[in-house]
Amino acid sequence: MSFPKVFRLGQTLAGPAIADPAAEIRHQLAAIKLQERIQPDQRVAITAGSRGISNIDRILRAIVDWVKERGAQPFIVPAMGSHGGANVAGQLEVLRTYDITDQTMGCPILASMDTTVVCQAPQGFEVNFDRHAFEADHVIVCNRIKPHTDFDGAIQSGLMKMMLIGLGKHRGASIYHRAFRDYSFDEIVRSVSATVIRNCRIAAGVAIVENGHEHTALIEAMRPEDIATREPELLKQAYEWMARLPFDQIDVLVVDEIGKNISGTGMDTNVVGRKRYEHTAAPGERPQIKKIIVRGLTEATHGNATGIGVADFTTEHVVNQIDFPATRVNCVTSGRTAVGMLPLYFPTDRETITAALNTIGLTPPEQAKLVHIPNTLHLAEMWCSEAYLPEAAQQPNLKILSDPMSLEFSATGELIGPRAEK
Image 1 (cartoon, rainbow, N blue to C red):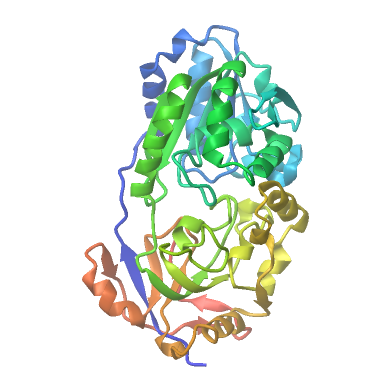
Image 2: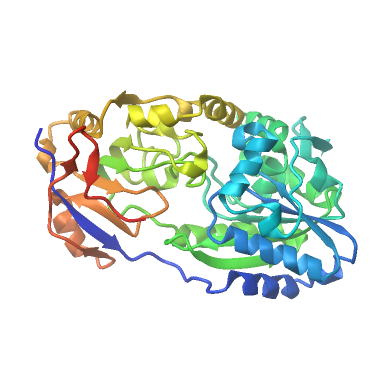
C-alpha cells in the first residue's frame, strides 16, 4: 500500500496559565473566608480523584498546608468511584502515579471502599458517601471542571460529580450509573446535591479549569451553597478553552495512547466526536471521523482500557496491555459497556493502518485525510497528511512546521516516525 505523506502541524490553543497554583489556592481559600468554618483540631477530608489533572499534587498539598495552618487535621480520601479496580490497593496506586502519597502530601491518605448511606434520593435509590469523609468534621471537594464524555447538561464533570459518584465509591457509582439509564445526570445531581452538601458537611469546593495545553488556567474556591450555580458557569469556560482537533472531516485518526488519566473514556469523546455513539458522530457532531486507531495504553491507566471500544482498530500490543478485570468493572459500573469492547486488532502498526485505510471508501490511501496525535489531551502538535495542506494554510491558528514526509515503520512493522510530541 502507498501510505499518505504527513507534515508536522502546530496549533495555537486557548486559555491563560497560572504560574503559582499553590499561591492561588491560598488566595482563593482566604477569599471565601474558609478559616471561619474550619476550627483547630477538626478533621478535614480532602478529595483526590483518578484523572490526570495538571499540578494536582501541588494543589492538594497547598490545601493540606492551609488546613494545617488553621490548626486542623487534614487527610486525603480517594474519590474515584470504581476506578483503580474498585479496590483500596488499586486506588492508592492510582494516586501514587500522580505523586499523591502520605509522604508527599504531608498527611494521611485514608482509603476504603466502605460507605455510609446519607439519604434516599427522590428517584428511590440510596445515596452513598465515603465512610472516612463522612466521619470528618468537614470535606473539601477538589476537582477539575470539564465537559463529560457521556453526560450532557449544565453540570457535567466537576465538583458535583465528585461529591456524588467519586465519594460514592464503587457502590455509589454503580447505583448512580444505573439510575442514569432512567434519569438525566443533571436531574439526579440537582435532586440530591443539597442534601449531600448539608449532611456530609461539605465546607468548600475547589474547582480547576485547564487551558488547551492542559495547564492550570483557573482555580476557584467556592462556598458549598454556591457550587450548584457557579459550576455551570465554569463549565462554559472549560468548553471555550478545551483543545480540539483542527479539522471537521478525518478519514483515519491515529491515537498513540488512551487511558483513564487522559479521559474517563480513555480518549475524550468530545474531541473525537463520538460522545453519543461509539463508532460514528451523531448528527451535527464534529469532527466526523471514519476510523480511529489506538496504538497504546498510558502507564497511569494501569491496564484499564475503558474507551478501547470507541476505536475501530488496535494492535496486539495494546490487547496484551489490558487488565481485563479492571476494565470490566469500570465499564459495567458506568453502564456504557460498549466502550470496553475490543475492536479488530492486528499484529503490527503497519497492518492496522493498512486495514483502516482500506475501509474509508473510494479515496485512494495516499490521498486519505489522516491525523496522528499523541492522545486527546495533547493537541498543540500533530502530524497530518498532505490532503490537509490547503486547509491548514488558511487557518490563522495553525502553523505548518515541516515539509511532507513518509511514514516510517520498523522491520517488524511498528510505526517509528514521524510522531508528535506531547
